[in-house]
Image (tube, rainbow, N blue to C red; front, side, top):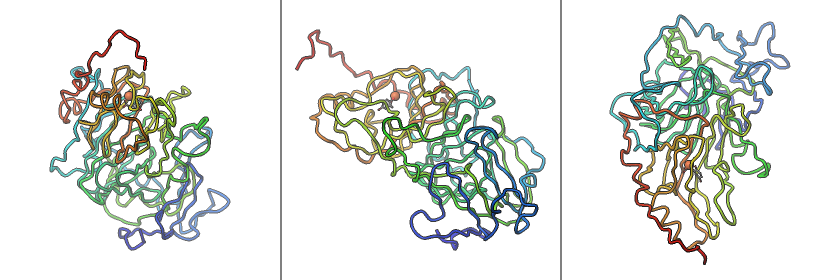
Length: 451
Ligand SMILES: O=C(O)Cc1cc(O)ccc1O
Ligand SMILES: [Fe+2]
């Protein structure tokens, strides 16, 4: 992107060439960036007067005393209190928060959905959000929600922030721009974006219609998983995460800011764009990641490891090794294990598994789990390959085989996931999904399976 592509009123100082224009590499780095020369104070955070008449303001994403603390210092045209008038409650009836347990909706089950179709209705990031599951409790900051977004138009002079959650965005179709207080993130399928709690932004449609998945994390922030014996390299490498450079708008037009707060939505009317941060420094930022950079590590002799080897990001729950959410990626990779049933094994899991297909075919479900579709295998409910996958994998001539053109993911949480009414009654649920295991035959013949 060059400065010529930017919307009117938007100024950007750091314009470079190459593929990572407008972004700074690294996960959780202490970044600094300014859209006007000298806008960022040096050597201190709170000078008596900031350059250009800017106001200094800190955005804290962790408790002050967390280790490490995450916060960003913003130097802005107006302090955030000027982007906040009286709030009044508004309804966004399809965006639900936990706890959301409906007596007439059953969540105990294995479920699968076809892609939620676009309806022809004009929908923005806010009106197009459709909650599928909720888990935990937004008020106590544990758990998550999964959503599908359907976006057909940009937010115009309208801004949003979630005090409840960090959002992990997984595009499946179309391209979106997140114009945030800290700069611009453009995302498309095969990429993800993470928008931190409290950060104000507007979502523009760059290419539509757009559909994708969102994991709304009520708990501790996503971080890179511990690598254990894998060591310093492979999986998601820190340098492949990109934070935006500073970009600001000096635009005085009647605007709205919507806030998600304890599961409710409130709107406030202001007279200017709140995206007025001219310079910032800190480690609390939005970021994006291209999943084509994910370097999978797997079985190179026999057996099928736990899917935790494919964890891109993990949000801790406070119990070591037991995530509030793991974001797990099943992408292209070579299968080489000898004398092995290669697809996922049959299993039951205390963690609840919400999966989505971005493109291609998933090895445990060659049919029916389609791009844009989702499945839910809830806490302790059995699942595994369908008959076609079982028969194919147990009779295959085993040589090195590439699983190509495939990208699915899992939002895995330690909490049971409850279906919304939308997921149970309006979304295209495959009523017959449970039957994919009906055809599995009894093969027991009473004799040892010796070769
Ligand atoms: O159920 C699934 O398809 C996800 C999954 C994949 C895998 O390789 C091992 C376990 C698991 O839950
Ligand atoms: Fe599973």
